[in-house]
Length: 265
Image 1 (cartoon, rainbow, N blue to C red):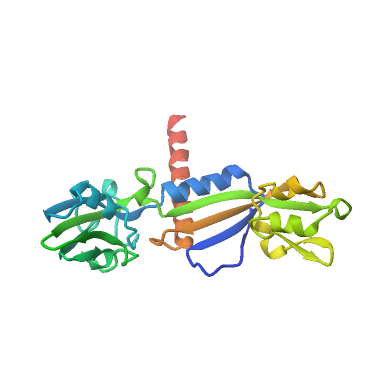
Image 2: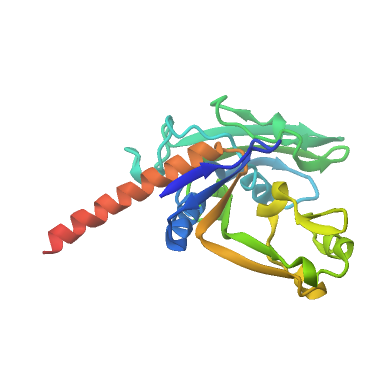
């Protein structure tokens, strides 16, 4: 396998790679392990002391559960692997509190965490709007979890595709500008009267076929020897940490499987 990191964009939470000499099954395994097996912190339990807002307790708790939290994988462990056996301790859970009295808007950044390393990543996210005499006071418990249990624990989005291949037959191209304008991701450019490929945007092609519908001079295909893997983090972990952790978990699962096979003989 050969891995090439594509040029990084302005968004530090998005990266893409070209995988050569690898099957789509391997790419899909990476995708599934990153999204489903890499743990992150998220709020699981909420205990209300006061809630006189217009929102039911369940709605507020649901909003809190979907808040992306900064995650420190070195300091915390999954509850099922913790020595407390799921009872909840400082090694597997974090307590967070928030209190507000209207008129005001409660924002995620107002939550106070027992561990400053674990806090909402987007402090301007609104939790509830309180009018005069309305109050909310609660304590939330955050813990590590996996995306296969609930998507709130998923660290991001991963998808892949074959590298697009575009062939241009200039003799069949009647209106180069019309073909160029038909592409939603600006794959083409026009130089003189000639239709050319914009190399900077080639990999953005998702084979929608709009150019083929206009002209027989453009043929779309895929290079099955190269797979483009896209990884987008919600912010709890860096893309590098997401992929590395996924591969470590995959290796552990393979070792466990190998031991099980030996024991079965």
